[in-house]
Length: 309
Image (cartoon, rainbow, N blue to C red):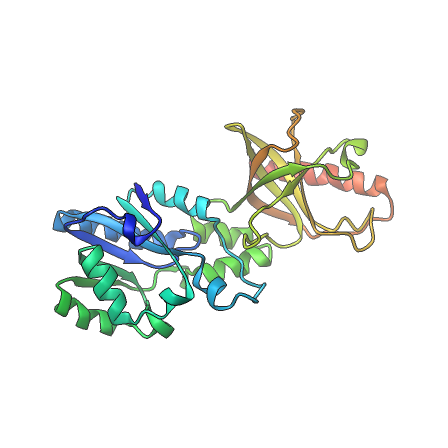
């Protein structure tokens, strides 16, 4: 897969099948669109192009909205799309100026003149252009004008519930890993740097690595304790992770992300790890003593291993 971070860097193309959207999460619904895109490119003897945007349009149009959270960092999205088999990933810098492009200008300047689209594959109820004015009907009209066909993929369902990035975010925000992971088609993950914490865990037999997430827009699942797998230096370990404020040992403390990696004794401060979420074990609780907390952690570990082994 070749990645292009602006329109000007795209090489001369002859015939392409194109899809466009934010593709946050690259979930099962997205994968169906991508499969159809690749098949369409093969049918017309051209290359497949996925056109997306960064920053997310909402970050630019509503810069003061601190509730915007994304399922993927840019690198995570690139890695997921790399595995999908598309030929070209085009990441257009989304600016206020770009947001003012009309639907006609978007189709003429980018899809037709630059990408040489002969087939456009879009998801159900797709809108584009200034104020989301462009619709499937507009694309059919523009297609006849600029020489491309349009295929709309109908809403894809799991158990009669339409898959969407918004529903996955809602599931993660409530700690519903079963729903989130089933819609994604993979285990949700976070990646961050290990930093020093209060080091209480090691005094009670459960040392933890505190994780610092550098991307402010990355969605962190609901407060609670989770069964997780951890990737470090190409190796995978079992573990349990806590997201919360440690009410047993501190009052109104900051939100922390701490993972206890089972059967692990390496020094990993300032190293990067990735955590994959498998199951929420319980909500965060305040215990009357450190001994009670220690007893609960033993139960948590036992329960985590049931889901991980």
